[in-house]
Length: 149
Image (cartoon, rainbow, N blue to C red):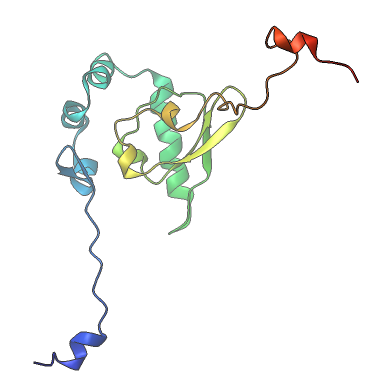
């Protein structure tokens, strides 16, 4: 009833789930021509691509490609700063680091496969979530009658 000792010593291999966007694996997404890729996106993004991308978006893609090419192997590429918060994240942008402007600073966003088909703006908050503390002076009617010791 004893299992062979070799099988006991070996740790179980962890199998990672392959990333898929709408049922298509990442390698296939990278090889897809733009027309086929656009068909996978939601309606708002499809409409935007069919109406044509202005030059500033293609320039951003070119800068990201260049930063990736210049970067050493197995290292993050340099941050490419941009104000284009409404840029759609495409498969070729994966692995890049984009500095997305939030109105005050550039938030560094490392682009991962799960982000395909979303906008850069979704990863750079434009406001700081409020933390509720004690109410200030004059916040309520009763706070006007604070006794002065």
